[in-house]
Length: 402
Ligand SMILES: [Cu+2]
Image (cartoon, rainbow, N blue to C red; front, side):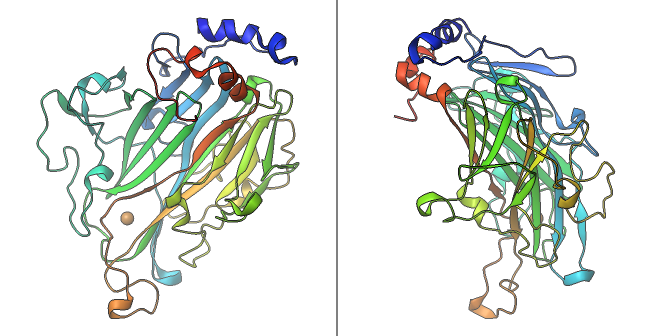
């Protein structure tokens, strides 16, 4: 952190307002594992845990704690504690709450398995079931998904950590019976955080019924580590817990609706911008009333990692009212939930009432993924660009924002 640290000491002189910053680094306690990227003069640091060691009822997938950007706390925790599958067929249709604590292997280079590494020359990033599943009806089982295993690669459990040059990529995969879910997250040198969730499969069970999958991330922010964060919608501060839905043209100037979280004192923040695929499946597309929201801003109550402390496979609805129930979120550290969903469509079944060529082609086994981008804003970004990105980025890294 040397270059960053020296830099931050200059802030009051350069821009004339107090930014109470000393470069900090997380302390990780086993089984947490510390990641510093790059290994020398790190930009991003955090503690990570695999799905089998994540918190919450039946886990929360890949779990990251005490995430720091350039020596400043961003997130106390990021994970995915709620996961669902529901099937077309009305009130009598099947539906499930899936578990998130059972790892399943990923095809990856030995050097990136549960440690920071680089992909061998000519090699590929870690491959999940979702990366493999591009056929409408075929399925490929567990790793290596009916593929040959390249030299230096193997099927491994845990978190694959790949230095991609401009960003570090973390990949994990977990299994809930016939589904195999992949959770990825990119941490970019310029501060962007890009999570992606892939809804893959192990076999063709329920291939013949149109169905939906829903993943809810939970991002527990504490920007600058002072418990003094504020949440806003399209720039309007919100005092109380709330839920919301995406709107591609509902933001300022006709752009997408976005949600922000920032430190009330420093002005350092992150803005959630939905990804293109996030819009494909709106809230409650099934009409079953199980998943009515895309975004929830909640107070981060101790030990509250989702809508219910009890795991029940047949508890098919996300109970937003248990999380959004009138608590103040002003000047605290909030937990922000964000939902993405996909629809796996069988033959001659969608849209409802369709026939023949009017129906969407079957795509039930084609793996679909979705996810937003968190984009930093405020003085910590202005500082970097005012003084030159190169000062914070060792080596030749892309200048993504200029
Ligand atoms: Cu599916």
